[in-house]
Amino acid sequence: RGSARCLSDKPDLDKVVADMLDKKGAGDIAAAEDPAKQEPAPETVEGDGESHRFEAETKQLLEIVAKSLYTDKEVFVRELISNASDALEKRRHLQLTSGDASAADADKPLEVKVSCDTPKRLLVIQDTGVGMKKEDLVENLGCIARSGSKAFLQELSDSGGQADAATSIIGRFGVGFYSVFMVADSVRVFTRHVDSTDPEGEGYCWSSTGDGSYTLAKAKGVSTGTKIEITLKEGSTEFASKYNLERIIRKHSSFVTFPVLLDGERLNTVEPLWTKSKSSVTAEEHEQLYQHLAAAYDSPRYTLHFETDAPIAIRSVFYVPQTHREKMGMGQQEPGVSLYSRKVMIQHKSPDILPPWMRFVVGVVDSEDIPLNISRESMQDSALLRRMSTVLASRLLKFLREEGKKDPDAYRAFYNEFSKFFKEGVCTDYANQREIMKLLRFETSALGDAELSSLDDYVARMKPDQGDKIYYLVTSNRAAAEASAYMEVFKKQRTEVLYCYQEIDDFVMQNAGTYEGKVLVSAAAADLTLDEAQAGALGAAEAEALAKWMVGAPLKDRV
Image (cartoon, rainbow, N blue to C red; front, side, top):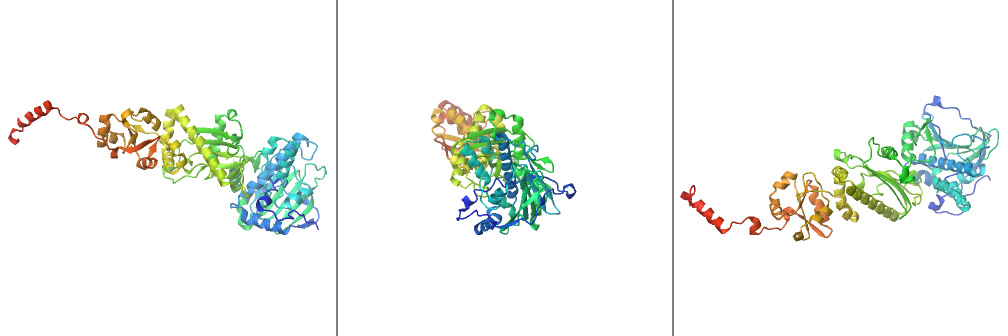
């Protein structure tokens, strides 16, 4: 009777999940863990409302979304805040195109608020966005995979609407709202559309326990926008903790366009610099973003702000820290680059964006075009991800090579701190091995103490009669190298030798094998001999003089 038919045909899960994000508008974030600080809810539901049943297929999909689709429960907070951001973006677009100054609550700031009440297991997310009409609730919340945001984008496209609004809309799949049922016993959604002129604030209340039905009723005292009240399950009370909510919001939603407030404090205060032009970003802004991403207090050693259109449109920013934790024996650190789409985090510290040996790099890669899986926790196209990783790794290698030429002293300090990662890369990243080797630096027998040479510089200094061999000696330090018996023949022949001071260096050189067509040869295994002149053989006169000395004193009695 009052049921909303939304899935008449069997949809495929990707398509089904591709349509419901926006108009449910998800989110205000009002913040207050102390019940004494919480104001009584102004909304009042009128009557019992209409009871609606989800379609059988919709109910089945709800089970999948709530129990199987997401790998991390905390993602539901990201989804609801993203929905709220979309609702706010729609209202801003409305203000710019047609104006809503006469609408109720038109003077309220565009923002998301979060509040919680731990004893009551209550979480509230509220936005001052566009809100929903009754038909929006039926179409968007009464049907999984009906995305209001996707429909809004289609309207913008058909009408030639604003590009900035289109790029700021996050939702696509229409399942994000239902992720709340991973943690919720029950959900109430109070909403009032921006077009409402009712003086008493008449809006609607949508409520459900996720059991296959929902109730839709009129409500009074509803502010423009959407307010979601979540009563959490017994085992999910951590999501009614202010401390935990702050951690989750800072992790997943630090860069959404509109202010996100928790207990009156704005959490998303750092700008997504990768969305701006390089020339408009200051060193101070980069330092702030780096410190946010790396949980650090220093300045980045190097900064790369990079944008490309191949294989897909990518905006990124990478930072090289001053130091790393692995040198302190703390084990292998996590990757430092996270994947974002439209400024919302998709994969934290992704292991797939850069090769594993580049884990010391901190940064963000953002793309509006990446094909995400339905839960928006990873990319669908693994081949595209590999191509993207290749492009980004190549650009970082080129950048470091350029820095080495531009400021050798700064690069030497950087290399001394991070050389272990490059040596690991030579042994594990065969696709980039040649380019990584260009970044290696060595002391050599031809240069002074603490001076470093690249392999390219060594090759440029090679003697014509040296052939196709690059010589290296693995030893503990320079003094030991210069005193080594292996060095005698090289000193006599004035052949330059690379000095390597770490045990792994021999493995690195053997693993690489060659460089620019020349063979890497250990001085300890070099097949070199000295001719008599080089070896210092005695001439006839010298031999005769030696013989006379030996038969004379003091050896005459022994000869």
